[in-house]
Image 1 (cartoon, protein in one colour):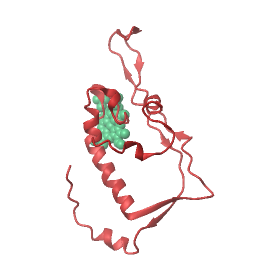
Image 2 (cartoon, rainbow, N blue to C red; image 1 turned 60 degrees about the horizontal axis):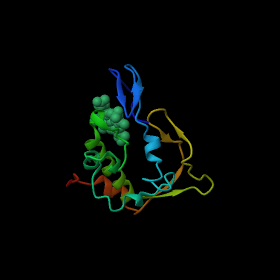
Image 3 (cartoon, protein in one colour; image 1 turned 180 degrees about the horizontal axis):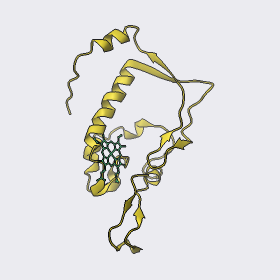
Length: 152
Ligand code: HEM
């Protein structure tokens, strides 16, 4: 779920009357489990974004909101203003982790995406991973890493 908001006046939306002081929440869970947009929505499948060349920031500006990549950062005029920073930070962190390590589930403790914790922002339940450096000299490579140059 996105962050709850409160209506400041009475209004009607698609024939539904919504009085002042009603709590309204963008239901990201339902949007992200719409099988028409995300077939096998519960399956972790990054390949579903192959061919989508827009950044998350660009996608959030699409006139047709149903063409957006996802709604993790909310929608409308209260959309997360930290989106451009968060998108870059996530890219840096995840790409560096994947460059540095391989990640393996433990056979005796399979990862479950069925259960989550948290209220508005939800995360999978804690799980264990076997994380293996891709090269033996990884520690010294990371220690000597210069500034990273970014092109967006
Ligand atoms: C993965 C990282 C992040 C996620 C998933 C995220 C998600 C969200 C969501 C869902 C909202 C509510 C949007 C809505 O109500 O429609 C929000 C609001 C907000 N976020 Fe983020 N956010 C992230 C990172 C950041 C960062 C890095 C900053 C600041 C540098 C930031 C600052 C804010 C602020 C100030 C709001 C309130 C905006 C308002 O109510 O007008 N967020 N964020």
